[in-house]
Length: 73
Image (tube, rainbow, N blue to C red; front, side):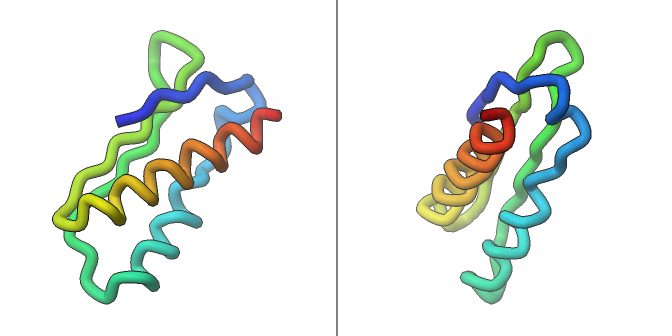
């Protein structure tokens, strides 16, 4: 799980779709899930991933974190 602070303009962004597509292409049958959501109490986007392939999960979570950071720059 990762938390990333964001600016208000990111509230409507949905970077998880791009990463989910990438994960599906790289592994024919990914077994896991990725949840990207805005916190209801603070300006933070929470990225939670779990799955059978720990390396892929970590890679996908890192990519989502980077997408959010790039979008808020």
